[in-house]
Length: 631
Image (tube, rainbow, N blue to C red):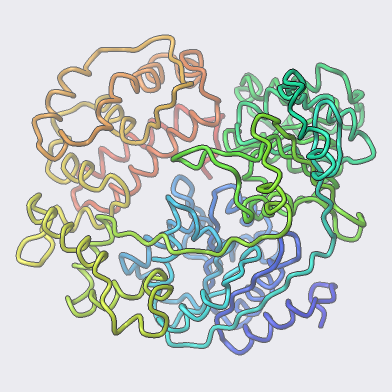
């Protein structure tokens, strides 16, 4: 079978047939094997039938890329984008959104879901994510029965169990399609500063004699590695788990002059950046990027502005970038393979601890090596730190993806409020048994066996919400109704904005309050100046409320003044001068505030609150004009 001039592989044909039969499908295939082509077919066919489709992605970067791709394929008038801070054409027949947005829509029984025929869950193995995995699980559980799913995943050994769970709780056929062969095989190597690029076993043999302690502490140098790989093994994706490290390494390589100046690339870069607003050219990251790109070296991470990311992606697609330093977001869905992938480290911080990558994380990134139809093999090189060298562990890591997906289901306050609002006690009992965890524990008997842990959690949260006045006699109060439309910091935002407390504060204090809720403290963050004006009375009033006193985030109020006060007096560049945060991280801070403001506006029936929300929204967007495009 052919589609868009391409002959489909057998697994793609199988997926297409399942879609034609109106079945749900779980496709498990290696990174770079062409899974997303089945989603393109699905959208094209359903559009012809006048049906609506939702395409969910785990990160905004992938959502933005899909919006551009789909707008080109299907016409801008048919495509919408919803990512929290950006809303474009929200009633379009094809809507791209983060998985959180979709979860929130089905949780609140949003009427915009009524006409949806299929939902595509791209990178559905994110269900394994410790912090966010429950979002995918709840999205499936709370979707209407008529909706079908196309779940796209990197290789997962228990894909059949996952598909069987969906079939069990949704009552329709779910087909499992496995594809295990990569179009371009991978060759795994390690890099040691003393011995260069070699096989893992050969390095093990060379360094297992630990008598020479000095040699055991040799620190690898990325510039020496690039010297060994350039130009034969380029284009090259160099993955680091630090945004700042990506920028620093790109600049270091550029200044080492390993790669020559590329005059053709420089000309194209100047043409593309000529469209940037003047303010964007002034940013530190923009200057560093342009300096690096002259030599075919780039960097890409979530802390970059969209204009800079688009520039890098365009030049990489054109084959002009030879070495790209990037974070793992570049390995999620974005179809930009290279000849070689380099791991700066095989350890990462997962939000709780530093640990070695699991096999799924490793192969998600490693899978970007090898361009179909160009390379006979993809080279994957891992930089080795001898002090943590673990031959057996690395042998398992490099062998194959053996990581199954596991349930991360948990009950949050928003979930409980919407369960109370939308379902009877009997329905809730059944829903609590429908988690993937229950199915993994009890199989097909999941609905006849109680899951006590979740039931206890549900009852405890109901008691807490009753005590706080969100639930009364089994029904939602005004505060409860407000809070069910809030998806993070539900109690604090409701206590401030649903009760009228917000009217006691001025606009700056409200911005400061929202900022403290979204701010993520880091040991490495530095501020030149903290501003104490109007903080003490705000903090004192917030601490008067029992429910707010327990929220530790309000301890950040004073620190957050460094990101809010300068915005009023010196604009965005005044904020940048006051912190060492990357520009994109500062943008993300304001983007999250805009997201909370959007939730408040949707939750409220008060015109006064809506007016306040609009004023704050317009203020932020005005201060970021020319820096960030919200359209």
